[in-house]
Length: 355
Image 1 (cartoon, rainbow, N blue to C red):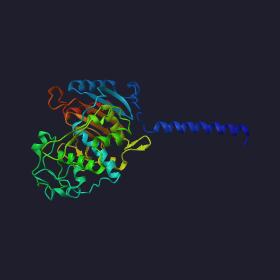
Image 2: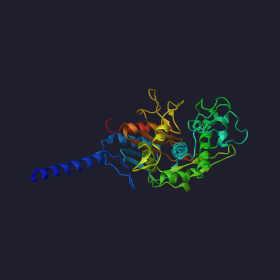
Image 3: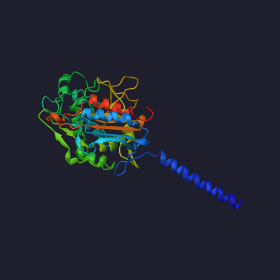
Image 4: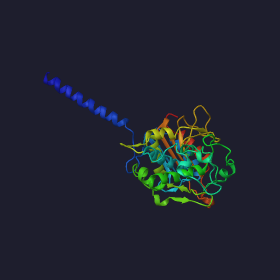
C-alpha cells in the first residue's frame, strides 16, 4: 500500500474508533456517582412553566421532598431531599427487592406453604386451609389469611374479609398480615434483619447517601406475632432505588437484583379495587384498562399512606419520588393523601419532553 494511503486509512480508523466509543458512551445507561448528576433545565427539554406549576401544587399540598430523575440524572428536585422520612407502606416494595435476592440465592422458595415454614399466629391461630397459603400468595396479597395484623389502618380493619371466606390464592386483599409475615419469613430464611439486609445488599451497592438501618424500627403488638418493619429513607436515596428497578436491577457493572425478579415483581397479578394492578408488593398499571393514574403501560410504583411514592415509568426512562412528613399522632405532620400525591406525579409527567 502507498504510504500516503496507509496514513489516511489509519486516520480514518482512529476517527471511526473514537466515534464508536463516543456513541457507545452516549448510549450507555447513566448512573449517579457519589452524588447525583443534575441536568440544567435549559438543556433538559422539560417545560419550566409546567414544572413551576407542579412545584406550586407541591407547596399547596405540603410535600416534604420531590425528586425527578430522567435518563439517570436529576432534572428537577425541591424540598428536604436528604432527610430520612417514614415510608409507611412504600416499605413493602423495598422488601420485595430483598425477597428477589433471597429467592435467587435459594434461601426462599415461593411455593413453600405457611405449614412447611412453621408460620402460625396468636389465637385464633391459622386454620389448616390458611396454612396452605404460599410465599407467592403473600407477595401477591392473595393469601386468604385474614388474621389481625400489627400496624393496620382503619380501612384495613373494616374491609378485612371474614376468616375462611376466600381460599389462598383466589382473592386480592391489601393485607398487612401478609406483608408483616413476609418480613419474618425473610429474616428467618436469611438470618439477617430486613433493615440490615437492605443496607448491605441494596443501599451500599447503589450508593445511597442517607440510609441508616439504625433509624428503622419495628412496630409490634398483641394482635400478631409479626411486627411491621418501618423503613425511613430520603427522597434522593429512593430515587436511586427507583433507578435500580428502572435499570432492571443492574447498577453499573453489578447485578444487584435479578433482572427476572424485576420483571416478575412489577407485572400485575391482580386488578385491584383501586383501579390499579398489583404485582409482588408493587402497584402497577393494567394493560387496556383505565388506571388510577395517567401513565403509560408498564408503569409501577411503591405507595405509602401519607403520600410516600416511588414512581417508575420505563417508557419515559423516568423516576419520580414524592415524600411528605408523616406522624400519625401529629396533626401538623399527617402527610399528603395518596390521590393528591399521584395528582402531583401526573403534573410532573405533563412537563416532560415530548409531552
